[in-house]
Length: 114
Image 1 (cartoon, rainbow, N blue to C red):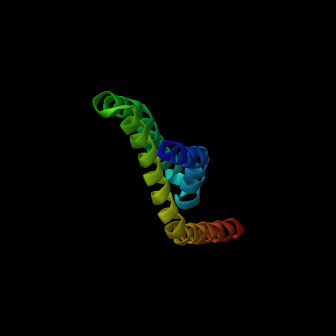
Image 2 (image 1 turned 60 degrees about the horizontal axis):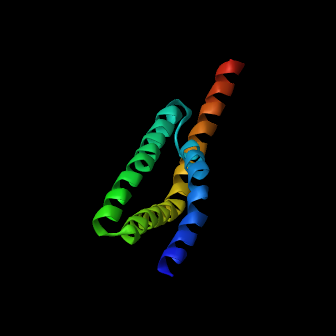
Image 3 (image 1 turned 135 degrees about the horizontal axis):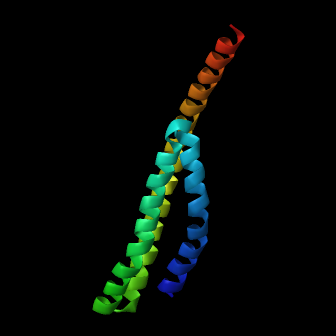
């Protein structure tokens, strides 16, 4: 029963992560650095996606299939907890970036009008 519960929660969380992480990077990083930020997100995302089957396969062989499934489920839940924490931290960063972009826009307006 535990596998079904953890698997259901994981299946609910997992599809929401990818698009929201990309949007979050766009919301908090200045335009000049967004491609680098997005590249770092992809490195960790694809690195985790490529190593998770190896680790879970090893755990399944060494300790049984249940341990492999639990590894994937709990690491995904741990990421969900971290993203929840980010939901409380990021609004300040978003406001700071918007302020910075507004200041840049004003500077460009003044520069073009003179």
